[in-house]
Length: 93
Image (spheres, rainbow, N blue to C red):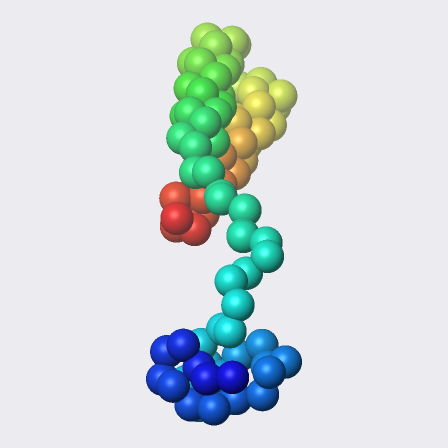
């Protein structure tokens, strides 16, 4: 059998040409199409908005409270996590 790309003689049962690497037959299975949706970006944006609203609500509570500090730390951590996740997802594309 001859390679359909370069014309080199190859074995009848060969899967690829040893000289040029061209496949001798068409692939039986095609790779799955990966859909890139913007829903993950929307979810990240909504999470940031919800955390910002929570921060505004917490700022209206009485000042000087120790629980207020913990609440702000939790909101800041949530914003950081949501921001990093959104950045990493955008970078993968």
